[in-house]
Amino acid sequence: MRLAIIGKYGQLAQAARAYSEYKNIDLVNFSRNDLPMEKHPCFDALQSFGPTHVLVASAYTLVDKAESEKGLCLALNTFSIGALSSWCIRNNVKLVYPSTDYVFDGSIGEYRFSDKVNPINFYGKSKMLGEVEVARVPNSIIARTSWLYGIGANHFPEKITQAARRNKKLNIVDDQVGSPTYVFDFAQRLVDLMQGDFRGVVHISSRGTASWFDFAYKLLKLKSIDVQLNRISTENLVLAAKRPKRSILLEERWSDLGFGEMPHWKDSLRDLYLQYKH
Image (tube, rainbow, N blue to C red; front, side, top):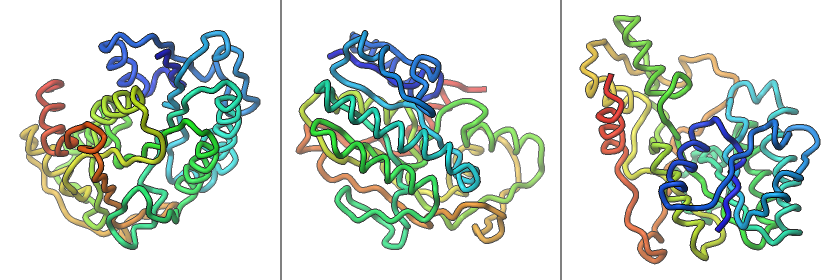
């Protein structure tokens, strides 16, 4: 297996690289400068490396800004993926494309991999269209996840931690429900899965469900940060993009695929806190 990871500095790219190196997988990371995906995709660097597998670990993920940056969002999440899909078809390369619970509208609450998609924001639409492109590749994996988080200033745990240290009370949305998924758990399962023969759509998210309020409460309790948390509804916020109210990703095939269950989100959050305690 020769793995090309498109994306170099994001948390998914770094997590996938770390786990792949642990498994002694021959790999290379490509940054946006190496593969300028948003304008005129150029795959010379990929061709030179000669991968057997390509993991797309770079995407446009600014859900609200996507409503006003539709061109850039489509360029990164759809058009460049179409060009990459064609390259993978020509070169008989396995393509692995992470996607999102935001391809669903939240109306039925819990979703299997085969359920009909119906995004309600532009980011979700761009990822859905990316899925359509990837599905053209005979040997491909579309891996949907939900509420992906890691460490760093741009991730929910650190944002909430800093806000709680600056304020005596916080208002947290309590009517959006999903499964918070630690990026390393996602990357580990994804790399393990791509090493086998699986192809098609799969849901990779933590067990258990939570609202953003539940997630914040658990995190701040772990960190012993004393702050008043108030439950609010999404309607109390001014957001450019709609969000699904309940988008739980179900995956009932893990034992058939030779894997155990994914960790519970509370366990992963606790382990992350203990690892990066500060």
